[in-house]
Image (cartoon, rainbow, N blue to C red; front, side, top):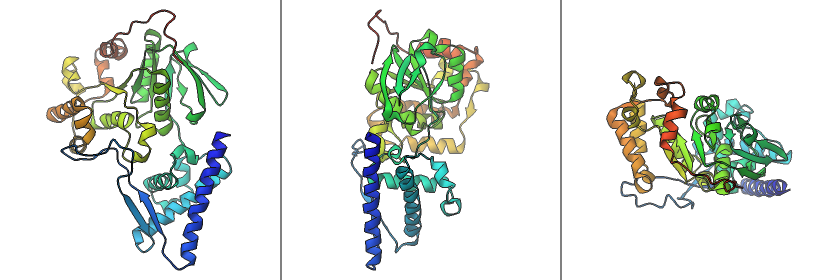
Length: 364
């Protein structure tokens, strides 16, 4: 019922928007579409900014009198028609589905992505409200919950992977006996932990977004943190892309800064892999790769983000060390010691020991 009410409200907003555009065109006027601009970080060296605020940081006005704007409005309206149909029929589609409905017009996926973000800002909603969704995250461990009447009982088999639900708003009755949540960047590391029965030996919940996390994965993680109040650790490759994925979980992405307030998880702590780890854990030289010119450029750009200076200066020091050393390495590099070194030595050495009192550790 709640989702139907949301869909009706959005359909009403779409009708109002399109009616307004048609009215202006019929009166011989070029319509203006005002799109608020959001950001979750800036490059102010003095950190005198308001990026932590969820309020708009200015606006952009699209008009048919400019060719580039006319093309963007054309794409926006085409995508809006598709979204309208999805809402009317109570169906779901992915961004990729939408792209292939007009590939010659959209030219590339990023064009559709921007249009969807524009629509979310115009309608003041989140992407999942548009019935545009894709989910590919995985979860395992000491967790049990319901989603649309379906029971997910990870506790009965803590090393079995479950796909994270797309409709996170329908997740309820969350129960856990875990001590912490561990995010891992890649599915290969997730599978390594599953094979090593990591969750059997460690009372935890393990999540992966299989690279850059999709929206359901980020919303599900935030829901778990809010409901269970557990510490959250994140394990990523020691390279610029891994670091960017880490910051996406904690601070949100610039592309979806308008939705940062419901997607970011400020409780996320960086577990590793740190640039300083390759010496601390005796990784041989052959496990290290030189930073490429693109790696260095990305790292230098990330170092300018205001939140690194204001909120996590210790992360900034590690990033500077990566640049100084000029090398990177993957999480799997720790397997040079033993195949199970990651699950048996590295991760346990990083996570504070938690003493659990019998009968006093069920969270819901």
